[in-house]
Length: 330
Image (cartoon, rainbow, N blue to C red; front, side, top):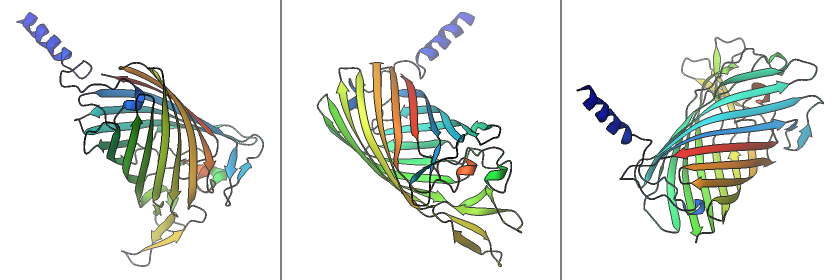
């Protein structure tokens, strides 16, 4: 009986998620030929890291200015990624970050925070299976899973640690298009809208009030595009740009009535941003992929408002962001 149990267990392991499955769809031979969704039955596990160092900031006019000598801001993330080809037309994904935020102030000790960030989950839906042209929709939900309660309040002079989450739930809806040119190139375009739900957050306090206040961070319009070229059968090079327009943030406090809410705008929080990027993808086999990326902020708005809290989503500091990603798939 025990021997039969072992044989049954080995059979279950062979049919597990990390083995080839007969219902799997074919994997594209080259990176540029991929659809916007994973082939049915494929499971993808990724580990990615990105880091940025900045000794500059943008003022109210969006112009880059140097920080005082000795000030050094570093922001790094380690991402655990999971993606699954649920069907021929639907892919599901999850992305969970760990954030390390570090600041070397003038004449002071380094301030450092390491904690979980805000996790993303979502799905991509491709209405029909096509050849050289692909079109898809996606929905992305960002949950407030990071640290949103500061160790000290009162401004930059009292910063003892940084936040790794905004405390805000985001819902993004996007449309994606892709055109493939034979086996040597492709071009893609993405457009979307991100709604940020106003909420009570730990880093907004009511002066002479009873507790924490509301933050309405302003919604975003996003537009992105990329062009990829295939070099041989294993290497692809991609250049891209991402633009987004951020609405004006508002603070809210309880009004005279129990159901009223008084909102006041936060100056210099609305603006337009533009990032440019380049990446190299190496895929030695259909089960492994390695990707290197570099990204630079080309245009931006005021980065000072939420800087002392370390919230890069609201106040991304200028500088190069370098990334490395490893993916294993079955």
